[in-house]
Image (tube, rainbow, N blue to C red; front, top):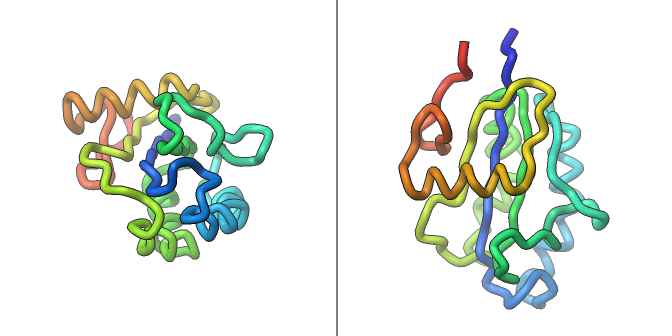
Length: 150
């Protein structure tokens, strides 16, 4: 049994001027469904949310077009199952309808001790580190994965 959980951050730059832009409506209309699906998925541990039950109002990049998601999962496999084998995958396939090409790493993952809840600042630092230094056992992405520490 691992002593670690997987933390992840992903960000996206919206095509809309902000989350209330009409181009974002279908995405926003399904956020609660997708978030509830995550919370009920095997391996889900925690996700960042504000008073509106999501994280779309959080703005660590001081850019109204960037939205952020941070979550914790038991392992890479359960996160990937949620991402690619559930209704969530339909939104991944359609992401170009709502989001611009970002141009740099937009997803970062790292291992945390069980029970630790990452802060938004910690998650942003991990993504920044990945963008500047590439994947390593400190922080990695979906293409270059590292196993949990032993």
